[in-house]
Image (cartoon, rainbow, N blue to C red):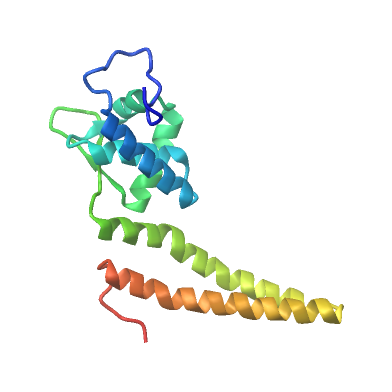
Length: 179
């Protein structure tokens, strides 16, 4: 068993168990998810689906990764919102099956839409609140220091607002360049 190995469950599905290379890919996506502040299960699920040619049902994902039904359900829901997985239905099969989106453009666009853009919008409100707090600050030194920090934060926010359209354009989400 390698450092990438997933603990086996009591169910025998040895023919479907992830190969060592798949475990290494799953580990890579676990690290990527955690680096982006996303739950480990999102990396596990996406990594497994990324490695497989065939769509997998949720119960297969649960067995192969030894994760709870709740983690699998929440992970698949989140990955769907990000545009990282797609559902597939087969005629005569009532199970919903999932495949990984492997086009980088779609992955980045989904991440920006669901993660970066909402934070940018919240940032405006938070900066306005910070300005209100600073206007009420009575300590002159604290107020001056706070205003300097607010200026830096506002600059960062503006710069991110300028960068995001470029990133979207580069990955093909938008054909409009910022001015």
